[in-house]
Image (tube, rainbow, N blue to C red; front, top):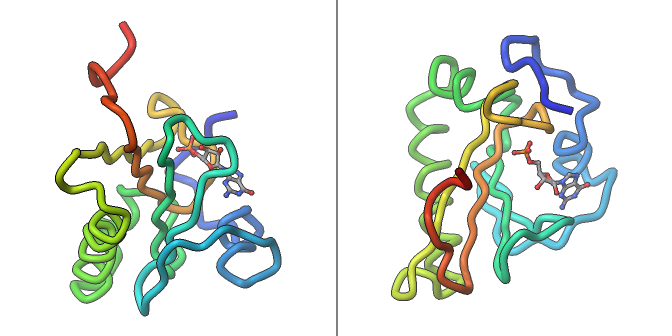
Length: 125
Ligand code: 5GP
């Protein structure tokens, strides 16, 4: 079910539990600002989620409330993950779902990183 991205941060969300090490994940990258791990239900040969370490509900929340260092660190981490996975030359897609119309299901900001095959048009019509 899609979430309301204007609600306050819920520290019981599944990605908060992953960040605290309460739920296992298949980590592909971690630094001071971000954690990246394989999506449990991959939609492409490569489907990785990159999340900030800070408690932010969505891109909206993050872009308003995160510090310059957190924003820079997170954006650089997303780029580093794609480079580390060898996706720059073949190409890849980033996606961040926000709220109800974006069909965001987990209320902790995450960027989906898809790759490993030609991904076709941007949205199903
Ligand atoms: P959203 O629709 O919120 O943008 O995407 C949430 C994503 O989180 C989905 O692609 C879903 O498969 C993934 N996901 C949900 N629960 C878990 C989990 O416990 N572990 C991992 N690795 N991914 C999850």
